[in-house]
Length: 29
Image (cartoon, rainbow, N blue to C red; front, side):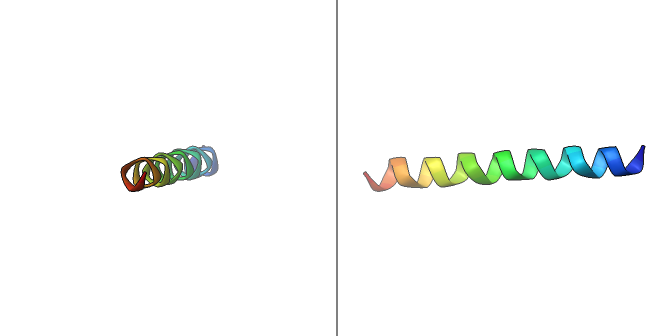
């Protein structure tokens, strides 16, 4: 159960990183 939660957190973290990079690139344009 704990491992699944860690996997989920990793997915959320990757998603947030992607969104942040998208926002940064949008601001630079």
